[in-house]
Every structure is written in C-alpha cells, then in structure tokens.
Image (tube, rainbow, N blue to C red; front, side, top):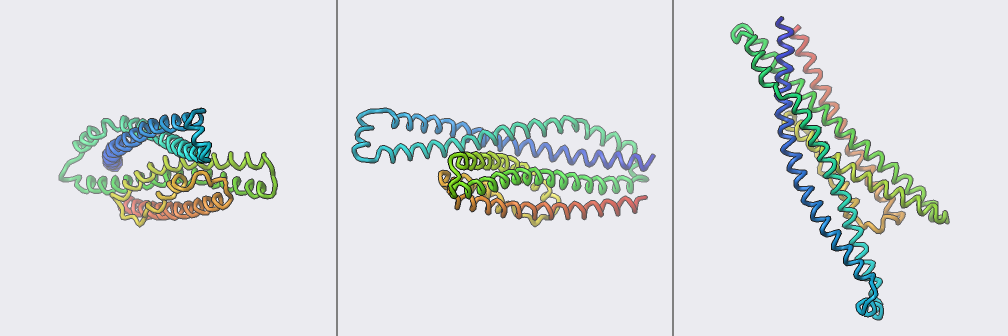
Length: 299
C-alpha cells in the first residue's frame, strides 16, 4: 500500500508543478503572440504602402519623365523595390512566427486540460496518509516528485533544442547546395545553375523562419529549467544568428561571398547549439542519477 501511495503522491506533486509551469507558459506565449500579431499588422500596413509606392513609380507620368531625364528614375525605382522586398521578407517571417505561436498555445492548453484535477487528486492522496506516521513517505514523495519534475523540464528543453537543431540542419543543407551551385554558376553553368542557386537560397530563408519560431520554444524551456537548476547556458549569442539573415544586405545573398559567410555563420550557430544540448544532457544524467540513488535508498 505505502510504496504505491508514495508513487501516486510523487506523481501528483510532479503534476502540480507541471501545471504551474504550463500556466506560466500560457502567459508567456500569449504575450509573445500579442506582440508578434501587432508587428504582423504593422508590417501588413507597411507592405501595402510599399507596393503602392512601387506601382506609382512604374506608371508613366510627368514625374516618371522628370526622373528619366535626370537619370535617377531607375535608381529610385530599384530602391523602392528593395524596400518592398525587405518588408515582404519581414512580413513572411512575422506571419510564420504568429502561426507557430498559435499552434504552441493550443498545444499547451491541451496539456493543461489533462491536469485540471491534479490539485484535488493531491489532496485526496494526502488524506490517505497519516501526517505523523507517514511524514517520511510524504518527504520522499516531495523529493522524488521534484526530481521527476526537473527531469521532465530538462527533457522538454532538450527536445526543443533538438527541434531547433533539425531546422538548422535544413538551413545548412540548403546553403551547402547554394554554395555548390554558385561555384558552378561562376564557372559558366548558365541559367539553370543560377535558378537552382536562388531556389536553395529561398529554402535557407524559409528554414531560418522555422529556426526563429522554434527558438522561442527553446528559450521558454531553458527559462523553466533555469528556475530550478543553475545553467551555464547563454542563449544571447545564438539569438543574434537568426537576425543576421534579415539584417544583412538581402540583395547581396546571391553573391558567392555572402553565401559562404552565411554558411560559416550557420555552422558556428550549430556548434553553439550543440554545446547547449550537451550541457543539458549532462544535467539530465546527473538528475537521473540523483533520482536513482533516492529510489535505491527508499527500497
């Protein structure tokens, strides 16, 4: 009876902590979703304005003739087109992030629904114990429940980190291909090599959207772990990586040197992320050993 009660009590304690974590996640994701949705709306309005500006310049008018005479019309039109493309890329990025956060929020709420009665279950289990004679059982359940909770948080952080890594691998593959096709292009590969190179660059951009979206989940899981365990992980260096793809000169991406630089930056990001995952996995092993020791002592 007692060992079974101890396990159930430990599970209920872990469930309570999990519910509290998920409630915090809902608040965090809702806040981030509001911010990203607001940015998406702003970018949508800016995109519409930029499209109008380009259309105005493309129409034949006295202003067009004036710019043509001065030799600056095409220059101004090219500048407007670049600004339009920049906003389009930012808009796509924001739209991807909003969709991802909406899915995350729905998933977290589903998990919360499964823990709706965990407090009542915990109280019912406490009534099954005798506060005086079973104080050791309760202490053991608290300790083991805490360790199980830590393990779960570490496991979720590792899973989120591996999701980012998988997206990063996709970006690397696209950039490697773009680099190879770019080399062939410089050697006179022709129209096909140019088209494939640009397709691979677009794939890399799409992959970065996914990296940025999944990075928000990884950050959230790291914060949860950091509340319970001392971490030596600094995610700041990795965060700036994804921004690089949008802050750099978008229109020079097709230049081979830019492809090579982006590839090197991505490889560095992968190395940083791999180091984070190794630290988390070491911590996971330490906590698992601690739990195993506790169970052996209790047996």
